[in-house]
Image (tube, rainbow, N blue to C red; front, top):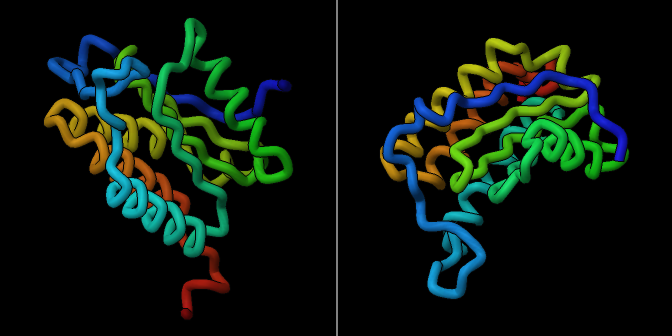
Length: 154
């Protein structure tokens, strides 16, 4: 897959402290998010997309050895939506958070916004609130992207 253009913010693993949510492929570990948490996150994403006109996506899982390349590949995997997409990728086992923006979305989501979202995700995860971390990250990215002018009067 081609590498998407955009910016990536990566959390410093040592800044994550005791962040060790119970996720993973082993049978002894439960699903990282309950169905109600997934529904809540879906609603947060829906509202972010509705207000900004951008496509938001969240990835939770291992990002492999080259986390940036994996995040870029995930973004490009969105196909025609990739240019206007914002991806929040969180790998709890690796203690990595990445924000990748498409070629159009990067105009509205700055490096500063991505860093702010990463810091908020790390803070929530260090408190053990993975679902809240994902929702907060999406909300911050959407807030920083702003509302489309034609949607501001809804």
